[in-house]
Image 1 (tube, rainbow, N blue to C red):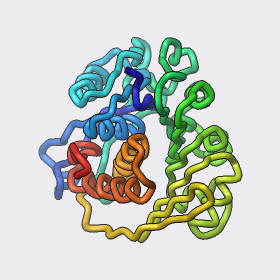
Image 2: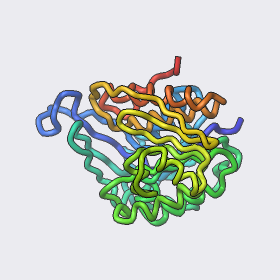
Image 3: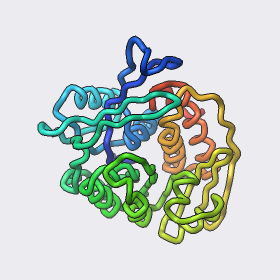
Length: 295
């Protein structure tokens, strides 16, 4: 059977204090994994879709742990390459404050189009890559474009603009080609404004659509809108108190993509994405609180 989705991107070992504790004073830290694309893959796998994640990891215990965790979730990792000369990236989370990355020179920063050899890109129903992959190195940027160019199914992009990465100073320039090669764009108002100019959510979506995506979802603080077939739809959202909001966007993407790949309406997909995004904010982990059904 073909895969429902294949994703490309970096996953790091993640450290965070338990909920309610500070990094400075916590007697121990929680060890987890985190990466925009693999977070979405975990969500999709929990919802019963067949997914694969492509990347590079160091030939180290951190890489072993990530492979074990994703395999337990049902994510296919057969095309993950191990690098004996570069480490697996790491991140440290201080909930409510900041995230510090230790990913410069990581194994994933050397991903290249060659890493896609043998991956059934043309046969999968959808592919996913985010702007993080565009920003961690020149070779990963090329790999992301190769993934999108080789796909025949739905091409999904989340710009995921980030500071502190190799390409962050040129992030709009580097991520725009990903948008030009996608069918479904999942983004936030502020980052879309940085990519296509000023305006409200609908204006930005219509401007982005002129670049090629046929379906655009724009997340905002109080509402989420979607543009498809020339029609703009919105749903209001309520943001409850969060233990840790990191990973909510990836979880939203998983819920939305799951519904759309199963033929559900945009309205149902927006509601599913919103529920999944809210669910993961109840835990420090990016994925542990992701639901196992949409009912």
